[in-house]
Length: 168
Image (tube, rainbow, N blue to C red):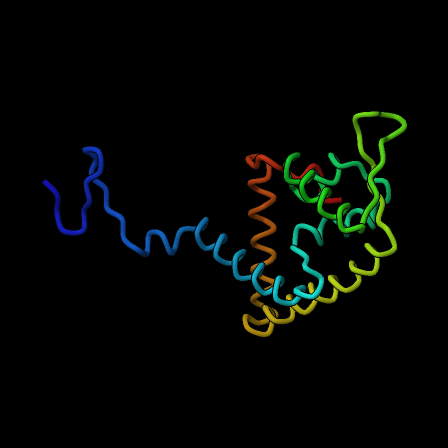
């Protein structure tokens, strides 16, 4: 027997309300990511860049000759995702990829002049993205949220399929 609000599926009874979905941490995190990504894509439209491409190109500039594995660990991307991202950056002429003389299986990444120029433009788009979010949400609340999200990320890092190796 089921009561009002209860549902039956494969012989099991469960109760799910819309709020159970809308208030779930994973749903809310995904929704905020969706919104922030949309704002970033709007701001970086002229450069046709994604947040992941920005992070990758920034780390390639920060650590010249970084290998793809280390890049993936630095920006928390699995091997296949980092390969796709690097392929796209290389196709667009923003990076050069070369075989490591020490390990022929490893690829070393270097930013090009055009990569440096586009990174400067995308960094400004990133700043505008943050400004738009901060203006709507408030500087103090955004700082609090960022701190909590960082703590959550650090706490759950070891459960990720693409954990940070280090944040240093």
